[in-house]
Length: 353
Ligand SMILES: NC(=O)C1=CN([C@@H]2O[C@H](COP(=O)(O)OP(=O)(O)OC[C@H]3O[C@@H](n4cnc5c(N)ncnc54)[C@H](O)[C@@H]3O)[C@@H](O)[C@H]2O)C=CC1
Ligand SMILES: O=C([O-])CC(=O)C(=O)O
Image 1 (cartoon, rainbow, N blue to C red):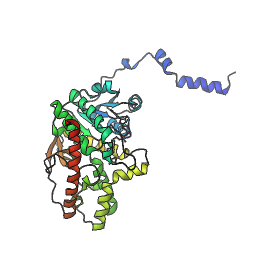
Image 2: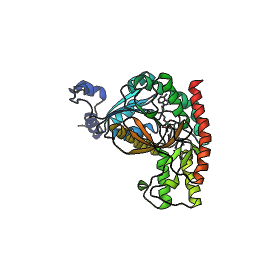
Image 3: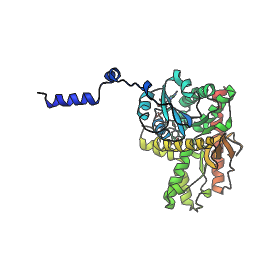
Image 4: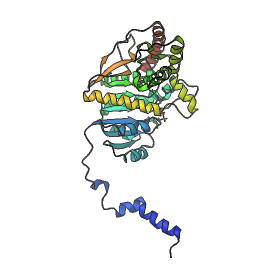
């Protein structure tokens, strides 16, 4: 007679046969399945897909009905992330790519490339402290874009965004593939934070609040235009000071709370997925899609600047004017421009010199 342990072991081995046994006994391998390929839609690659932002972002893009093919590239761990996400019964087909030898395959044929690859901050660091490591990572990945999908829209998340977007632009210029309307620095998290914190102060639902955030994506370069809030709202000077400071330091607030284990990942993945969705809807030809983004710009005298842009089939189709600024915002703009000038110069020099 069998002991209960033996009985459980027998049932368990039946339910979960070892994978080698599954291969031997299964009559139907994956190659024998009847699938004809994915649903119609866009092809999206995430570079840095196994990271803190990359994984939840990959999940959100796997859930996006506009995505038919999702390529996940990283230098570590993509096989596991890919296997995991590939069991979700959504339309996008997921494929994993590991290490630089597979970068070109990951990028070939992509419509949208989202880049959250690189190291995050620890407490006490500025985003600019990440430059030395992340600049080289962004250069290598953007060189892949020039080779394999020069017409793709690129959403750049890796910090310091104020410098990595100019780096990407120089890489594309060097290769002769630069289209400034298709390179977009992701600043959506600044808008998400502004909407959330303003809603808290005003006692509103954050989904009904919209605050343009212009300038760049670091400290004083993050300039929320509270005077242009939707719905139109007035703020006391104390509220303006509190909100501006909190929005500008939102990243640091998370870095300190995470106490050395990284920076914003979940809220960033959410923001990046929203921005990517806006880019895809633009590519599809939807009208009236307006987002803030850090792009090559003529809105100010600076070559790169974050402001509201209208997205369409060509990427950025229109730069919306800054609109009227109050005295506090005009002073903030001057401070932002001073720091941005240096960050842009640093990025451009990294490739040129
Ligand atoms: N634009 C924004 O608003 C925000 C930007 N960030 C930035 O995003 C970046 C990523 O942050 P996390 O995901 O938290 O970092 P993480 O360290 O968790 O993940 C980064 C991933 O990049 C991968 N990676 C490193 N070198 C690579 C290469 N050469 N090619 C491909 N993948 C590579 C790593 O293996 C890792 O999986 C950081 O630079 C961070 O500062 C973070 C939050 C907001
Ligand atoms: O603060 C950081 O280092 C990450 C980031 O860009 C953000 O959360 O806005």
